[in-house]
Length: 579
Image 1 (cartoon, rainbow, N blue to C red):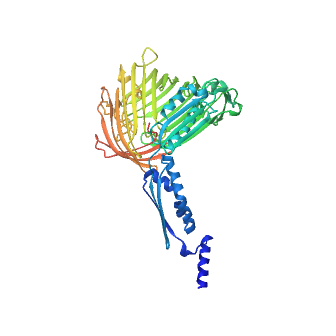
Image 2 (spheres, rainbow, N blue to C red; image 1 turned 30 degrees about the vertical axis):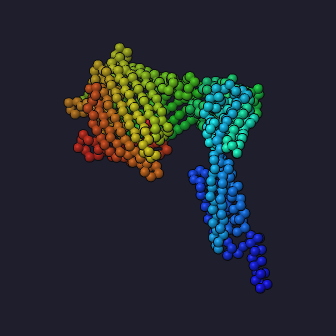
Image 3 (cartoon, one colour; image 1 turned 60 degrees about the horizontal axis):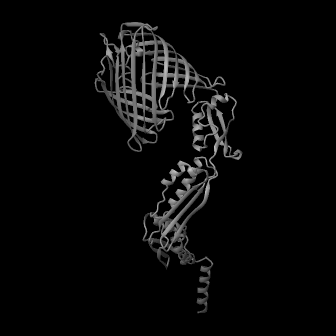
């Protein structure tokens, strides 16, 4: 009898020391009832007995201690939602080898907001942005108290004040005053902004370009109200110049005096020269090779030289340009160019020498290019052989809006061009020509897109025979009407040669979808034609395609069936950006 009593005491001693034998360990189940949704999730995340059970805790004395603490855990979990007086009924059953902890919760009446008092003091007291932000804060009298709304309101006010240049911002008072017995709360926020900072001295740490060249592109100036967003705009604007691999724009907080913040700009230059070579294949061009060079800044004024050589089975294109940056918007420039082009068509060929000058500007959202080109072109089509000289003035407008430059899912683009020539002005013929091209992309779901394009062109010419091939309209090819050879659609001469047309209409609708990784498929319908009537007869093609998302754009492999010919399918291969 004394032996049994001693053994029993030893077992209880082991339990007290946390070294209970396996027979006294429990598998515990924790049940929460009476609340759902966010309330239940928060209760379960804060119940320490539930956390302990998940970690394998099974000692009885530990479970009993955590069970006693559960009411405090539940109260803490419900307070952020405005429940300050819950009723909790709890039980803990310890059975042989198993335990159940059950908590039945009645949240009780919810605390509501009685008054909201939010003030802005200091330099931001009369700031319209800050005052307007007060109207949009998620805190209203008589709505349920949510601590998350309170935290969001506090953070939002600080963010707006900082973005407006108030760097000494902080709260004099930030309180939720809860009256538990009456079930209401008063919120008091008093924000002290201090003075609004201005942009001080702007320092540019570089020595390759004249500072004046960089400064004319800055969207900020000394004396402007300070704004972190303006610093980001400055960074993006300078990166668009094409000179830099990185631009750091940072406030010198330690050197700020009398609410004036010095700004330091540290650009990191790209190599002054760039060379690139490539090989490829396109259905319209055949095999091709290319060489490119770019002298990004040949002097301290930021002038640049670009050149490229592109040779394919069906032609060649060699050219270069000297570019002088102008204005205060990246991309605005005066350019002088020269070019040699040779191209083989379905039933003809042309060879051109071109010199020109162009002025690129961006008034508002539209890019405008005004140009003047002089060209000599020798061309043949059928039995016609001719040489023409043209002095061509023109202007083009372009605008693009899309969400991604390489793989857009939503966006559109518009291109407009008008140019012409007149015989009295160093030209062999008189003509005027206009063209408009529209493209758009819409998302259908997370992996699918709808792509559409439409193009229309019109020429007004004294003698079509004297219009060089480079100024005639053709349809057919990878980026026109798939299913038909490159520039195979147009008017025919008496011998059946395709000689182009004065007018052009093309359109396309395509749906593509990612299927696995970067691989996808597409289905499309194309239509278009070229002729000497305002609305040429169109040819149609349908097909299926394979797509691969490469770093430089989508690789497209299409099998297209021409609906207006007996040919079964035609292969089209291309690569590039959709817009």
